[in-house]
Length: 132
Image (cartoon, rainbow, N blue to C red; front, side, top):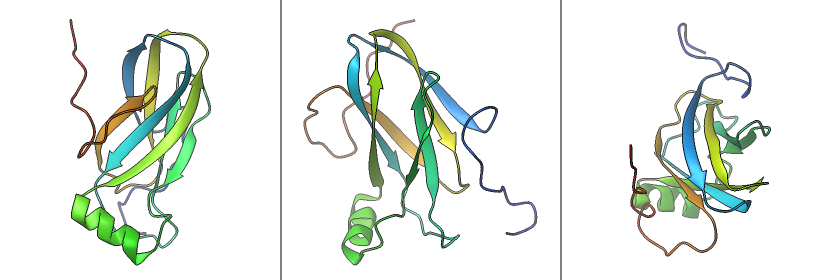
């Protein structure tokens, strides 16, 4: 690792994270689709981030897990890597969605929380309406 470069982090506690407060009208199973910028596996051990809701344990995702030529072609043509994690929320209401840094170099473009079927679109649906 270069001098001054950020080391790999263990998600949880006070490690770097982005918190998003979200309101869901129902409990149950949800999927979180993370859209990140395509990048090379500069560590040769994968490039990872983690996702969690509320106080649930973070789920670590390696965005460079698929090393096939077909995957690389899709990442380059879409200018994005799309990964999905699945979570269970016991109740409707306010929740905190956390996106944790594991490896430096992951550039988050968008998070999409899905409850059920989402129509296909380039880079997901538009942002939800927000009232202050």
